[in-house]
Image 1 (cartoon, helix red, strand yellow):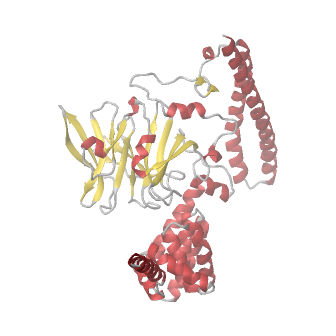
Image 2 (cartoon, rainbow, N blue to C red):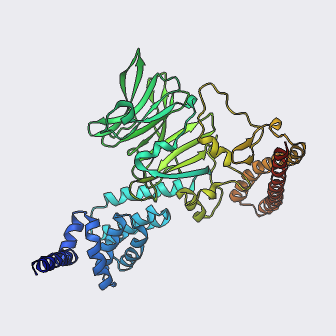
Image 3 (tube, rainbow, N blue to C red):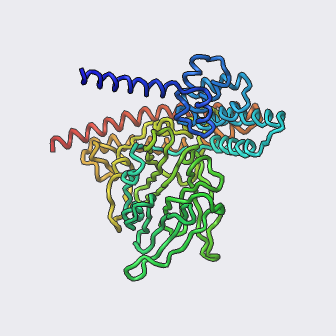
Length: 477
């Protein structure tokens, strides 16, 4: 009996706790909301929203809680409803939602309306105007999205992202700050140049992270110098990487007009004045409304990496492997949805070239290449198996396979010529106002695109035949 009474009291206690947790009043939820404790306020506002779905205030509060806790999909419906009901703050938060989902043109529209309402109510517009400038910058950046081939991606824990980088020794090395200096409290990275006599890193200085460099003097890292990358001393600079030229520095910053969190920047050291040039913000898809950092280039491999937490769960990031462009090439389309998808990296396959096989490059990305090893000279790249990639004619052992691939190689050269001609002609077609010129260009572009499609199909088939012929030869010999 005594045991039963104790059990009954325990059961009632749990039930009472659950009742109290679920019995949050509207005033309690609003207090949490005002204190920006959105995760705690969210369950209560969801309950009130479901009970009264036509209440514009409930829609606003619940929508904001969803937005602030990263539940962007759930935020859409209540915020849209609140906008229709002319809840002034709903325009602001709907603009933020559109910004985070790359609907930059809608974000601009929402903030323009928000400013209009604030002016009518004679309220301060400074913050809204600053945000509008940011949205307009993001829209322009999205329209100029770079056509970069992102060939692989890997989702890892935020603390382990450096494990996805495998640099050739000639490109230097990266290590966690905690491993290099044995200081557990500093969560960042250290880049060491290929000569192993200079390091670049970030560490706290006056409550923010700043970039520093040190040189190896005898057996010690000494002569520490601050790198003045950011005029705003209240924002962080972090995750440096230096190109082999010793003057080009890529890094992440929360200052200099970032889209959100960390953005990627590049600057160059001026030897004559012993100063750094004004930093340049990288475009999309490298930067986003989220945190983007640790961009690294390996000139030996012809590859690059960067990390982002866009659309990732808390505590996880995605490391992207890409092929750097010698010159920035924009995504050539007037379709804003396509640019939006490419800017956001909705799918890395969207950036792949038709008929291109990236297996060999992905494999190369994970290989260690010792210092002094010559750069791989490539006449072509033919993947035979996952562990066998050919780059030279002498690599092909089967005479039949070589003969077949020579045909494919000739077609690839023709295809490259067409690709070079297509880009400027498409641009001319877009810019010209002459109807006659448009017709001429349109006919020429159509002819080249048809030939391009033929070549891609033929190359794919010939490569398949060459691959099969080589595999048959290898099995017999």
